[in-house]
Length: 354
Image (cartoon, rainbow, N blue to C red):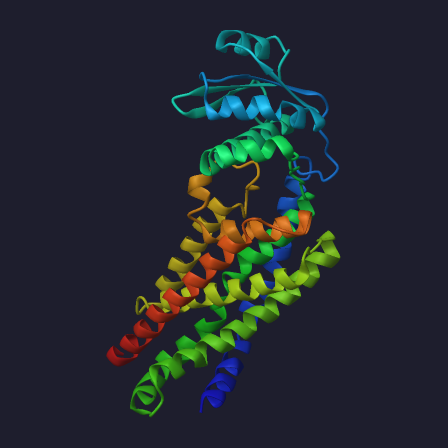
């Protein structure tokens, strides 16, 4: 019975030619537009050239110890750290002697610069703030380990590579649109009443929608990945892990989308809810502005599941591994489990009242 229902729903979903074309063409258009706009900012062959960073820290702070111990490692990356007081540091930036000045105030790191949007300043801000955050999270252990370690480099993807990956992720989160034709047909022809009177369990009915939507979204994602690879020379690093994360992402977003479809009785309102939530997650997570240079605080980015997905796959592409992979899988697994539970319950309730 389940197979028959899946087969019928696949046929209904595949009739939505407009949605199929939309979800294939849209990623390519957005990739082209954003990669062109940010081509100068993201350059994979960019290198630092004698960047001078001044800093002033509070006495015996963790940041002060970390920067003092890490000065040689930063120097290997051609970032020269110079300790100075607050007033002199700002004056040296104004005189062009320093590119940026870091100072610690009320347990926060602030940056003084005249070229806020320059690549060297943004890169230094990202690297130092990331290390400061890690230092706070890991405590003194990190400071001891860093003395014997090496400074990890942050590799930038090209604009085409970054947005080729990111937009594939963004549009796979809209894959539940394939299911709108199925839901619309059921409501129009009052098929829900037949399901309720049939011996099928609510979970079977849920799977009959979930599985076709996942299959259609995966197919669309594969097409988008091929297009991105051919048109924008996208490099997919750690391919088996990338595929696994993408499949889990599809499952999580489809489960979330089904829950939204049955949250309200109006299909148009459900679609708007999905678009708004996905756009907010994408905005926070780096779908439109690169997460590397985003002004959004790290704590806010971590609220978006798309941030973990974006960062994991981009770091797979540039480094072959990602420290965010475990968090990404955990976050998507929770979304899948919670949304599947509530989605099946909402579907059952909606069918009973229709």
